[in-house]
Length: 388
Ligand SMILES: Cc1ncc(COP(=O)(O)O)c(C=O)c1O
Image (cartoon, rainbow, N blue to C red; front, top):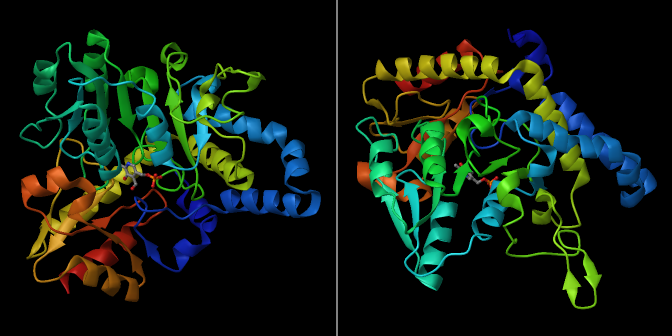
């Protein structure tokens, strides 16, 4: 059970605004903020290098925390600046040849899709978009039917940035494994919102961010790469941390996932990330997911009763990202109106998930993303505003 009073006391800003923008950047809990301030103060006192040395144990522990969050090994984790860098490191490590195929989904995130386009343009690899089923989820039967010897990667977004969808990540993993195809999962919006188990999912690479549902600092992200694949992936860019310069003409890549990192890091942010992961694990990801689902269901049900409001969500088990439109009210204006009423929500542009937006004829949509620290009353305040 989540102790809402304690959680909200540790999230002071939650008393001042209804913060429903967790898919953008969540409010950090006080211990996450304190860990960063503490490290920054140490850096100001000792200097950055001595501060990192003094905190080496704690900073190493961040790998253990992230590994626990994902049910992975610590050597399978790289800590980087954001989800995009994590994803890029994995994707651009793969070697494609002309005619190789990349299978992806209709709601793929823009950052990933433009990287596919670049590789298609540079190398002549092909992008194939797996159609969605009637509910809007990736159609796993269609995926299975599209697999042949040309397919060199399955890369999908588990929980897209809008559209409420949760793609069937584990069912896709079973197909990828059966055919021995590398599987890169964008779990940016999933971590911190629901349990994530790389063994149960069967993905080979997974990217995520700190600042969204994990409630960590901005500028933090991480990459998981399965042990068996790790040694075969040469990062697209390396430095002397990823690959020590062992002889005049030689470098040797690290054995672990830190081959995807660089030498210099924001250790205060990293310390905050570790605390954020431990905080989520302490509450329990099942409990977090249950509350996220209850609050987002309340919002969807309430919107369904408001004339002119249309929930634009897809899939069988919707995430805590609620996308909707209000007739006659532009998304951007509504975000500003909500802000004036002390309610923080966001808007998603069609360019962030272009294929899905074009397929459904969607323009800008409103995006409200509750988290476990929100209250039913906050959801109702948003509903009242939408109904006004
Ligand atoms: C599904 C998805 N993938 C990747 C990203 C990129 O994450 P980051 O901004 O941490 O690089 C986002 C950010 O909104 C996202 O929603």
